[in-house]
Length: 386
Image (cartoon, rainbow, N blue to C red; front, top):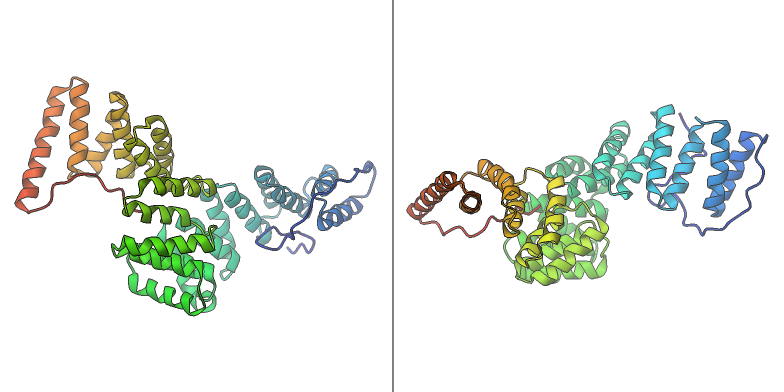
């Protein structure tokens, strides 16, 4: 079904408009087509609020009019009222589930509302219906990258490299996924292509990520810093900068960058995890717990989250609360000494001496095995880099 008068919201399809008020005329008895034409004219002229009133008047008379529902969603999107936009797009799709443009706009509304996981199936449906849809493909890849699903990003974008390889966002998303899965040679090819097209934030950022993967944090910092100066809006850029700063032992500056990332993307796993860890180290335990809880909602079974939650509860004297995550941790990573150390401490403080002794014995066994292998003594559970 084709709706030529649907007003898209994707990317630059809706022109930027200034809000201006108009008196809402009496609509009782007026023809719905006349009302819709007036709504479209107001929408296109930049009077978003006036357009909303007329679209709603149309829907009072024709509740299932798809183009009115979709355009009303676009108007709410323009005002940043994403939940209202989502409601209208869903109603439009209930009537006409095969309108790809409406589904794409629903995905974009979820995306802008930071409901990334709900955006994914909408973008996937668009890509399935229109396999080489560039906007839906890049948005889906960005969602996957934010969710830490790097191999899915590679699988999604690789078939389109010939036709989209010169697009900087495409190269950034694919290059980041390649570098963070250890595919440094292919990632370097993407970096080289970006620099051949001229200096770019994406190129500097990817080069910085490559340095991090090679353990050259000192070289990574100036590259990522340059990328931030050139384009601070790149997805995940502040979290990557924070990671580089942290590897250079500048935790205070890293915390600032992690907070900047969360201003853009409250659901960034790495930023929530590491702010929780850094706040714990600074003995700011209430704040630490909130960040770690958010990280836990994103990846509830991640050993780093379990360790962080157990550690912050233990530091706050909440021994009963510390017990479950630490028990889950040693079950998930039975060779991790520090997990057993913390769990033994919790058991002893709860008066469970026998259980504490069991954990202590496990620690001694693990330390003896490490000495036999000539391994360094374990100090801390390194949270996996997202």
